[in-house]
Structures are given as structure tokens and as C-alpha cells.
Image 1 (cartoon, rainbow, N blue to C red):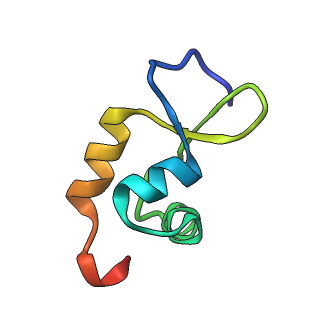
Image 2 (cartoon, rainbow, N blue to C red):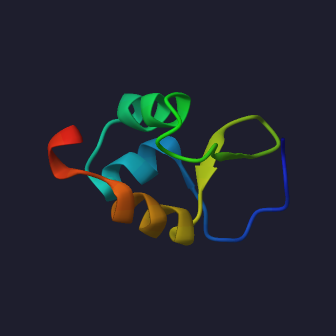
Length: 65
């Protein structure tokens, strides 16, 4: 569902770089329910806000990256 996004926001590749994990890890963690569903922009791309990045950092286990 596309919603009004807080800015700045980052696409999955940028978020993965910031978090030190792959795009695949983010997608898989979301599919397995380890991460809440990501927001989507109007084109359907996953987007992450700075608060999303901080939340994901808090739940990541280093060896899972």
C-alpha cells in the first residue's frame, strides 16, 4: 500500500548498505515475519525511513547479516 512517506527515505539497496546486509536478507526477514512489512512508494518499491533503519538495527543479529 502506497502511503505518504516521511523524508528522507531510502530504497532497499541504500538501506542494505546502511545496515551492512543484503537486499535479499531484508526481503527474506520481511517474508519470515522477522521484520514488519516495509512501506512502499507509489511505484511499489520498498522504502525505509531513518526510524525504520534504527528499528531494524535494533533487532538484527550480527551473524545473520
